[in-house]
Structures are given as C-alpha cells and as structure tokens.
Image (cartoon, rainbow, N blue to C red; front, side, top):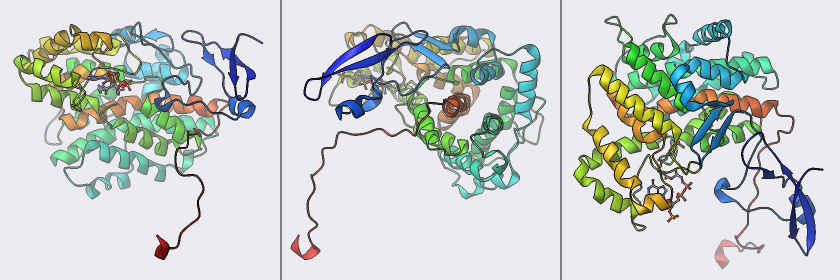
Length: 428
Ligand code: CMC
C-alpha cells in the first residue's frame, strides 16, 4: 500500500485513507470507503476540496495560471493549432497526423446539416427568445432524431454521437441567430473550414455570396480553442452527472448548456460586456470598483475572479492579444477596449483584488472581440456552448469508458424536521 492519510473519527475509530497520486497536481485522499467504515459523509458544498473523477484530458494549475490539454499548453495550441486539431486531441488523446486531421475534419463536415424536421422547431420559439433557450431546446431535441447511435455502451455509437454534436452545434447556433434577426437559415457549406462555415451560416445571406475574412476566421477559431475544455467546471460536471445515469449524450449536452447559461459561468461573457457598456468611460471605473468591493452591493466585476485561477487566466492573456491583433488588422477600434484595459489596471492595483487574487478570466475580453466580429451580446454564451461541446463530449466519453464509473449521487447534511405525525387539515 502507498501513502495514506490518518483520520480519527466516529468514536476514536482510526482510519487509514489511501492517498492517490496523479501525473501532476495535488494528491487526493481516497474517501470512497469512508461512509462504510465510519457512517459519516464529508461536507463540501461547491466541491471546493473534492475531486469527483479521474481525468486525463485537461490540467489546470490555478496558482501558476497554467492550462494544459492532454499536456499541451493552451498558449501554444491557440497560437499554432486549429479548433479541429484541438478537438481531435481532446477526443483521441494525441495530436492528429496530417491524414488523421483531414479525415476527422471531413467526417465532422459530413454531419453539419440538421434534420429538416428539426429546423421547423425554431418556428415554435418567440423571435426574441434568448439563443441559449433555443440551444437548450434544440440540442435536447436531437435525442429524438438519432436512434441509430443510441447505445452508449458501444464506443462506435458514442463516437458517431460525439461527431454529430460537434458538427451540428455551429448550425444550431447560427440558426438561433438567424431566427432572432428574421433572416432565412443559411445551410452549411462543407467546402469551408469548421469556423468559416459557421461565420457564413451566421453572417451570410442567400441573396449574395459571402466571403470569409481570414483574419476573423482565425480569431474566431482561436476563441473556440480557448473555450474547448476546462476540466471539471460546473457545466462539465453537469454533463458528467447527467451522463452517469446512462442518459443519452444529446440530453447530457443540453443539461450542460443549461448550466453554462448562468452569469457566474458561461453567461459571464455577456454580463461582462453589458457591464463595460454600463461603465462606459474610464472616469466611471472607480465608482464600479467601489461597488464591487461593497459587501452590501450584489454587483461583482464580471469577467473577474475564478474558482481555480488565483493568477491571470492564461486564456485571458491570449484573448487580450487577439483583440489587439483583430483591431489592428481590421483597422477598427472600440472605446470599451480602453475602458476594459483601464479597469483591469485599476483592479489589479487595488488591495481588495490583490488580496483575494481576483484576475481577469476568459470572459473579460471575449465580449469585446465577439462584438467587433458582429455578434449581439445574447449570442456570446451560445458561442461558448458551441466550442465547449467538444470538451463536454470528450469528458462524457471518458466517463462512460471508465470501469469505475458509477451513477453520481452526492449525499447531504440533513437539517430539516425529524420524523413527525401527519395532522389532518382540520387540526392544523
Ligand atoms: N468581483 C468582486 N468580488 C469578487 C469577484 C468579482 N468578480 N469574484 C469573487 N469576489 C470575491 C467574493 O465576494 C469573495 O469575497 P469574500 O471572501 O470577502 O466573501 C471572494 O472574492 C471569493 O469569491 P467566491 O465567490 O467565494 O469564489 P468562487 O470560487 O465561489 O467564485 C466566480 C468564482 C467565478 C463565480 C466568481 O469569481 C465570480 O462570480 N466572478 C464573476 C463572474 C465571472 O466572471 N464568471 C466567469 C468565470 S470563468 C468562465 C467560466 O467558468 O465560465
């Protein structure tokens, strides 16, 4: 037996809990037998000290600001790779060869169309529906269309479902946008790249040819890479929990989308840009920083802080650089970028943010660039969901393939009434 941790609990009962070691990162104390041996649970709301699974996909060192996918630093992937390449890496453990990449990209492009019957679902939504509401509904509805790959115990079925989800998300998100602006849906063009096709389906119209701008395409692809996976965050844990019951992958990803929507998670990109618009000019920043520090004010600096990063989020570094590159190449500017830079500078020199180790996260700058590309704020979180789908399906696959996989079933510290007798209505 390797190292263990000693615990004295439940009437001086002494317990040796095994310590498990990963390839890198903190060791974990294995408490799986704790309840059987002591009759006690651990208590960790928010999972601040709990590893819920074993995973070989993504590693984060929050103190150092490191993010690795299958060992590769996010900065290198964002600089040199493509979203299709990162998707292959997350799904298959290794970077693809040239042939593997072209085969994979071709397979994905063959699944980009939606069943025509599914397209008619859109008409049931109000025109002003939030794209995330549409995404939850339409992705969940995919479950009703693909009975040919519904055996989650079959790796081949899981693979087909994964490819379908990755391929169809751009079509679903672009259609949500088109529906909201009252334009006809633009069908996929499989001669374009994954990202180029998405841009065309979003911004193209049937009345004229659409030319993909390579600068925008590269920036968008990089944004997708930055959002591809992020370890056991709330939405990924939701996908795993939903999947642990044996639910089909489309339902699991719909659950992930619902969780991502919240402003503390993926919804922060929309909230961050709305906040920058509300702040407006740099002279108003001190007022908002004071509000963020005020315990009696619910306002928080959106795009700031992270459960795991206690240093600069490496994705925010790439995002800030991408904003500059796109603005320079397209010869555009946005006064909100100056406001954001000044806000970051002031917050990072303020003792409140220094002591609490609150730094910009991926969502702080993403809204500025998405807005420059032409997306309305309501689409931001839908784009996050599109990109995160590959991480979700890779994590879901990893979980289903794990021989130790069990249904997720947390316990609780019960604080409600003890047993009591029912009183008939007339006696209450
Ligand atoms: N502005 C002001 N104060 C903050 C902020 C913020 N953005 N974030 C955390 N704090 C304070 C918080 O009030 C608390 O103070 P105290 O210790 O005095 O009670 C302390 O910092 C620790 O915060 P926490 O809420 O206990 O930390 P958490 O790990 O539970 O929450 C978080 C992490 C990301 C939800 C939070 O930092 C937050 O709400 N940030 C704004 C929303 C945001 O940008 N979310 C995107 C996260 S990255 C992308 C993604 O995951 O989707």
